[in-house]
Each structure stands twice: as structure tokens, then as C-alpha cells.
Length: 232
Ligand code: MN
Image (cartoon, rainbow, N blue to C red; front, side):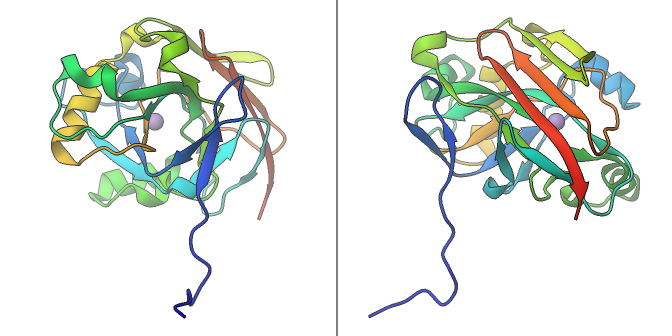
């Protein structure tokens, strides 16, 4: 009999809203610099440059309501509220016009970032991974099927820290729309059911510390809430 020599990866899941169903997470793709006000606050060029992507491991997912441990290596731990798209059907070399047919649903997510590590890597021309792809870096609220929400084009997206509004924008302000993002991504890799795409954050990112309570939402998709716990 064949046996695994170490425990095999457990399937990471995100609940489907208002049901007992689960969405199995395959990969997490994230989009950088996709709201012009955020590009400006990061010191970037607000011109419409082609979208670019980075990844997080599937097991970086944490559910809404969780306490996220303050990560190692950073003194500048940032939140980024984002509209998350859950892929339901394989998508390879698709056009923007076809893209919505490949979506299973949408969720509210937070792209947690070790900003100091990310910026140091950026400056040195090194990969972003240690700034972005660490444990517990991808909080994600339950997924709402597109069959119930319809296509989301212009919804309010917001985030509060300890009750104070820090991010407040509209998804219509995405530099690259969801269909454009999925089309571009699908020309570089074959998107598969279970993939999640974090679509970028609006302006207002800042550092958070142990004890902070983060709440955010996207109109029509409910809220996400996390607390920042002690470090490791
Ligand atoms: Mn982000």
C-alpha cells in the first residue's frame, strides 16, 4: 500500500454565504496597484499601466471573526480591503466579455501586508513574497454566489479600524475591472475552479497593531471582521 510520507495538504475552504456549502480554495492571486488613489499614496505612477499579479498560498486564508497573530519580521503591518472574486469554471485565454461566466461568486477579503518588507523588496528589485505571502495574510469572508448577487460593477467598499473609517471607495474606481483582470490573468495562467482573485485596494492603507479591531465590507457582500492578536 502507498502511504504519504508527510501529512498531505488539507483542503482550505471558504464558506458559501447563507448555506452549509464550502468553496474549496485552490490558489490565491492578488492584483497590485488597481485604484489610482492607492497608487498615488504608494508613490506610484497613476497612469493605466498593465495589471500585475502576485500570489498567496491557499492556507493563508483565515475566516471572518478570526484573531490574526501579529506577524514576524515587520514593524509596519497594513490592512488592504479588497473585493475577492471566486472562480467557478476553468478560464484560459478568455476575453473580458466572457469573464463573468467563469465567476462562482464574490467575497470581502483583506490583503494583509508587511509593508516595510514589501517596500524594501520593491526598492531592491526583489520578489514581494515575504511582504505579502505569509501565514494568516488572507482573511476572507463567506462567498456570495454570482447567481444571487448578479455582476458587481459599482459597489461601496470600506474599512474601519477600531470604528474609525480608513478606506471608503467604490469598486467602479478599479483601474482594471474584474472582467479585464480575469482576462489578463487567464492569458498568463489557466485559471481553475477554486482560484480566488483579490482585486486590489483603494486608498487609506495604514499600520495596525495588536488589539486593533478591523471591520470592512463591500455593498451586497456583507462584512468581514478580524482582530489583531499578539505576536508569535
Ligand atoms: Mn492588495
